[in-house]
Length: 326
Length: 263
Image 1 (cartoon, each protein chain N blue to C red):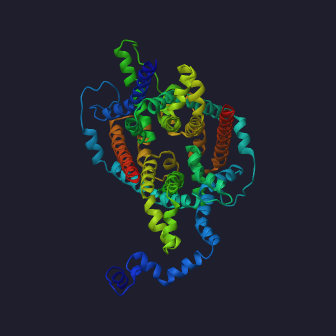
Image 2 (tube, one colour):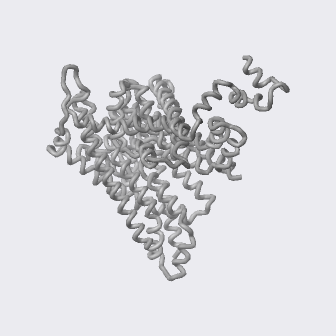
Image 3 (cartoon, chains in turn cyan, brown):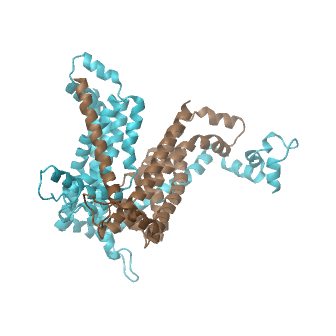
């Protein structure tokens, strides 16, 4: 109470710095001693600043991945009382041993690759249009228009796709109206419906990097190429495309990683013939504990593969960019 | 030639807008259908599904549960993410690149892998599946986004400002609280709203780390697995309106503060 009074009410007697909260705090002896100790040397100051973030990223960001790797190398987890835990590679061998394990794995990779490419083809013209053909003021509005649906969650948007493509869905209704079909086309529970759903969920992650790459591109480059006699297609192929490779590379990496990780969308939109690896992994966690090491091993396989693939892809794009610059 | 391209491209844009909006609009419409069966055409309309949703205590408590998880996990993410950003931005030290890589790691791990890694780690830490586990997983997952946004803003803070504060006798803590932090407020608010939405919309982590109480996306998923019904449309529409409204408000807010910062 008295502290408050001196901080707010005191006039005249206190010096200038004593009037504010910060002033009284810095005049408070214990605080000054603490700050004095903490900032005695730049080195100590840095260590105090760095200690918590370092601890956090090691235990919270890296920790789960390392623990997953460790569990994947054991024969039982969680360990039942009285049972001894052994280290083994069996969980990894299991993956190669059965078709129902590696088939979804390769299906997921191929699917994610194809869908990434489709997303790129679909969003590049949109990003191009926004960045090159729309005035600055409208650009933000038209981009915001596309952002709105992407604030909506994964499950809600997946459900929207289910309604769109169902047997009594809107697409089939429209086709019937036009007399193109007599019986509804079974779009649902196929790789088609799954693809539409995943592209619907990931398009924005491709659009934004492409847009920012295209937006940075000076218009004068285009004009210069035109003055030198390049046609529309040549201009695009020789100027625009090489200079937006960075955006393409980061957009594709993002979309690929996100598509490999979807679980709910394939469950809801896919069928028995489109099982993805996420469902395989999840299967080991629905059953009682003793399957966890296998699930962890499969997740590790997927993570390492995804990282290697996107890493190689980024390297490739990088060398392509450097090659073009010469 | 150029003109024709332009028209063609604008058609592509508007087709894309249709692709993005039509499924959601259809989903919203279906919530007003006066029938148990999902499907077109809609012959008669009703508001019953909505009155049902707002009378359903399970849905309402799930909504509250999801919001609570989103708010609490965002608080953690914002504090940690800002702290990491302050450490990383504008400082050179041994292992900075590694530290940066580790910071963004949770954002790069594909959803399902991140969910089960958290699930296994929660076991190690002794966190029971449930609210605490979901908050923790969402908080860790969202830290990279806060760190990136705050770092971007921090890089535009002129060094002279904090130096001036130090010259006037402020210690590092006071200089941070009175100069740096107020400057970061727009970025922190923007990042918080992004985290709120990420957490509120998240399915896979909530699903694998949840106990008996579902979050809203998990509830919708569970209902969907037992069959489609306009009731789900009404619930999903409520979630949609909530998230879209927050998103639009945040977008306007950040644009306004950016404008203020420029002028």
